[in-house]
Image 1 (cartoon, rainbow, N blue to C red):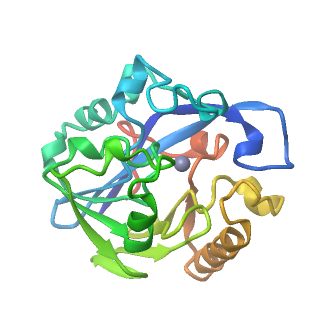
Image 2: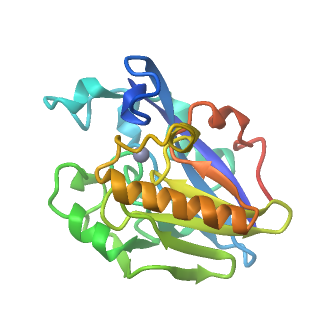
Length: 252
Ligand SMILES: [Zn+2]
């Protein structure tokens, strides 16, 4: 099994958005990533799909006219589109067999529309919260061409690929656990943990339900320590630079 980290641009926001009380007022660029997993049988799984490619020329595409437009500004170059990153690995969208969305926010499901040939896995609680809800812009993912399989809790999807429910960021948020041969266990936290400062400063107030987010974060931390796992956080501007990133590098 191989894991590729696909860098899909940044969001410019106040650090308070991801770690309140740590460095309030500091404007930062937080990374937005998707993850490509090549399974043992060569089939391809995408974990999250990043921000929609049209943000390259129109950063306000999603939030124009809302307070979010100033609070969270997408910054994407053409290389940061999902299509570009896949093409660098000589992969076309129709080659993707499965997509796991940690959740359906615009920076995690923004290119679902390109992946009509795939089966999507989302927790039922998240699908139900997101449907018709403007906080989860439906134009990117609630499309008749897409087929969703709704999950109820912890599920082993493939050999070496499991999802763990980690609510708190939203209802039915899920994190993804991968068993890699060389690297060992990897936890793709999604937005259950934005950055290491959430743990280091016990800073969870940026989450929709901070108390449940803390419980989910602590559960992941315990899981990671029991499995000697490497945790990849959802939007950590420091950790991002330490990750092996596609197309040049991967985890095996
Ligand atoms: Zn996010």
